[in-house]
Structure formats: structure tokens, C-alpha cells
Image (cartoon, rainbow, N blue to C red; front, side, top):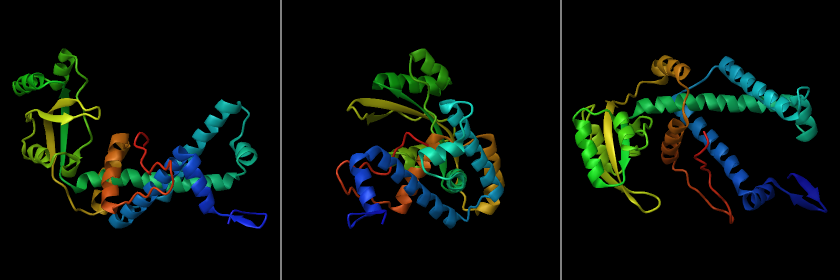
Length: 273
């Protein structure tokens, strides 16, 4: 119960219904964070992945420092985050830091789980070009098999630079027959063009070069931690990596979307990390 007004109770359920109906974008963001938090917690428990309190504290301090900077930029050099929290949001600074600490722990676990998940299944690293016609795609395949450079060929033909997705698991590639081709091909192979239909209904042709294929491992987190931590230090997790992990985590968790009211937009907002 949040309030009692004229004998009637206003509950957190009432608040949720109101937000879902009248502020669906904000509700979508909130639901996304809740789902991600539970996905991370479940995966971390399953894989026995942990982070140190010291790392959490460093991440928390960075977050708070950035919020202080934003407050000064918006309200002036003398503005204080503590005053804004109390006067505008009705929050105390200690509670804000405690929330930031919880978010920091989830974010650190998430990054480690993303990289650990990449090591669990067989993965293929590929580069891809997309052509509007089969003749152009077929000609490009012949040139690439003859030794042409993928990026330079794209530039010469006026195409977008080759797509370079994060390493793909077998179930990331559709249709299954294409996945079989990718994982059976030796590194350096250029596959035959494959047609696909764009969201606007147009038929395009995809040309894929297989860069590398790696086998998955079931080694425990303790055995892989040092290498994964070093990799994160060299290159943070990118948005594409995170979204690929999220899709797989949602499938594994068998997340069911329920639309309770008109205007509800479910948990996924993929343009955000």
C-alpha cells in the first residue's frame, strides 16, 4: 500500500497499471531492467560467477562521479548532487549510492557472463556483405575466392562496410542449413550467396566469409576467469555482444511475455546496452 485516500488504498499494483497504460516507454525501460537483473542473477548463480566488492566500489564511484558532472553541467558549477536528490527527487544520497552499488554489481556480473557465454558454445567469427541482386553477389564471391579483400571490395562496389557481428553460436544463424555451412567451412572460406527478405519485403543476397571457428568449453568460471577479466580490460563488452547474450538468456529462461493492458510494450528495448 502506497497511500490511503478517503478510505481507499492505492497500491503498487495500481501504480504499475497506470505506468503501463499511460507511460509505456518508461514502463518498458523499467521492465527491461528488472528482467535483465533476474537473467544476470540466475546465470551468475548457475555459473558460480562472482565479482569483488572492490570492483563494485570502483564502478560505483565512477557512476556517482559522472552523475555529479552531469548535475554541474545542467545546473551550474556550484550545484550539488546531494541537494538535487533531496529537493527534486525526495531521496537521500546514501540511498542513491546504495542503489548505484547494486546496479554496478549487476553490470559487472553481466559483462563477465557475456564473455563466459561466448566460450560455452561453438562459435563462428564471420564477415558479411549484402547485395541487392544475385548477379552482383555471385560475381563478388568469385572475386573474394580469388583473393580480393572484403573491405576493399565493398569500397570499390559502393557497398556498406562488411558486417562484423560478435562471434555467433549455431543457433544465432538462420536458417539451420546456413549454420551447418558456416561451421563446416574452413577458415577463410567464402560461402555461396544466400537470399533473405528484408523487413520491407525486399529480397537481398548475403555473402559470408568465415574468419574462424572455435570450439566451446565447459571449463568452470574459476579456470576461465583470468582470461576473461584480461579480455574485458582490453575491450569492454559492446552493445551487439550484450544483445546476443540477452537473446540467448531469454530463450534459456523461457521468458513469457504477458500484455496486461493496452499500450504495454514488453521488456525488450534493443537499442540500449
